[in-house]
Length: 287
Figure (tube, rainbow, N blue to C red):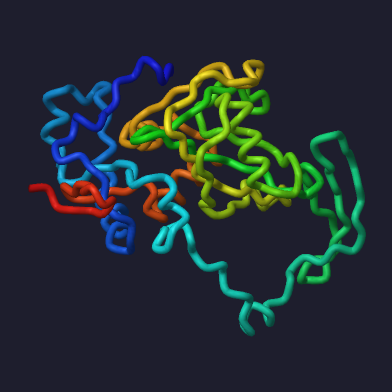
């Protein structure tokens, strides 16, 4: 499937398209109405039949100024998770490392085949992969106005081209520095604003990695990567189109899916009923 040849719902395809302010009500409404908003016009959906699907909901970027992300009330300024309570501390660790055994290493990873003891007293081995000196990687959702940016990269392990958000291994111990460097490489420009979207573990069954997720704001959408050996193309699409691609499986990159989900939950991209943004950057009902 060639994503570039597809036709998707755009902002003008859904009456009352607009953004709504972030908050608990928005997140709940999003979870209920999202399927109505990610309608594709690829077969079997024709232009006529598309209109018969419920259009009460819509998806968009919350389009207040990027700098407001970091101000009071910002949905991304969430408290850190609570420390482990008594019940968590009482929970016995079911696998104990007896001896770390390095099986392989290169400049990107170290592979351990550790000797361990399980909860039932059996002994065995567990494989553990440590990337980039166990420093955090990043994935970044680029935003420019009402558009979100994707890059097209060939993923050798998967043997496939993938569209997704810019991402990469650690450039050091500061995830923000890594995020800015990755955006420069993959989009050709550093962002105007950078805000955290939380953290994720890409495959905690075998990887020790923790990946930081960010939203990056641009005044204008960049389109020329510095690293053309890695990035073959850049596209900027409306949020409904992004969600449509995710809905039908055209985007499979787990980092991108996690960052998009976090952005939805935190109100950076939202779903709502016929809401519009007024000049002050707050939601107002359509008139």
